[in-house]
Length: 413
Image 1 (spheres, rainbow, N blue to C red):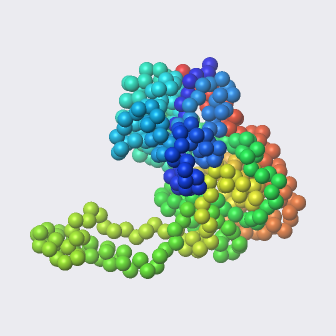
Image 2: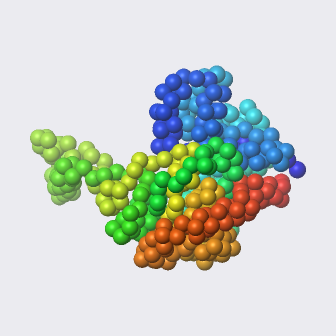
Image 3: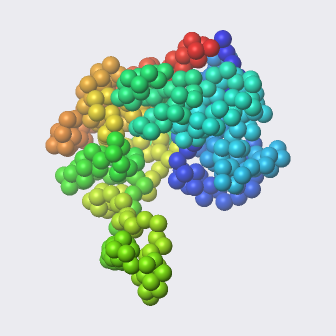
């Protein structure tokens, strides 16, 4: 059976800012024009999944909940009132209720619609029969929200195992590549980057601590170009931040020792620290060996074009994927015919033929050795890149994944 389905997404804020900055007048256009431009930019999963659902007979609506100019334009056009503190939730709920779907497919993680929002939506939109959330982040604090949905999807087997052990209805569905990307980039362009990495570096537990370490070591051993949203340390600001920490420590130490707050607050300049809610933190900068090598991040079509134009694309999984090949770069790089050099994972042979469709490494030195070998043997590199693309277009497309999701939807209905 096929249903009316809303796909609710949340994009990287940096990608949305970049998208609107490149078209200064876009924010003043109609909702329909803004939406079409955003889908054409191919950020995140764009409307690839909605299109695949439509191909199966679904009626779909694509919502990008945190695209502020877009969403607030919809609200203006439809006379929708909202609380400025929760505009992204309230406008999205109004759109869903207007569409009257049977399935709500939240692809941007559990933080878009939390437990109370899910319950409110079910109560005020009686057409809804099924609510699904896709959450690929290692968010181990969302149990109450996850349980508000009918089932959860993740691309990471480690996350799926964690929640299954806690009785949650959760399924592994890998990320897919959208072949229509190939019609929107220049696939005849020659390579212009020899060895590149495109991706985020989040210094949080379960995210990219290993990635940061590997990249920092790699840039000292080989010419690796990096595109990532990283910040360089402004060294002149560091002493100032350390001084603020010292002032905070002294003043709050005196407060805990029994000195009255009103006395401490009267101390010139330093007294302000009494009212600081928390100790000033040092900026969470990535290793400066990486930052010095990094270019500004790229998103959407520009990212796909850059991947295509890169001879060898480096892939490093997040820390949560200790044993599983699961991230999006696997499919994006191979899909556009870049030769993928990826960290070894135990289940990788189930997805690609190692050393024939993708190349693997288990250490920094092996990554350097194989990258240099591939750059010295262009025919072999091109053969592996072509074989990887064939495998992706056969087995790892968005249509393949939506067929799995459709089966789950019908099973739960």
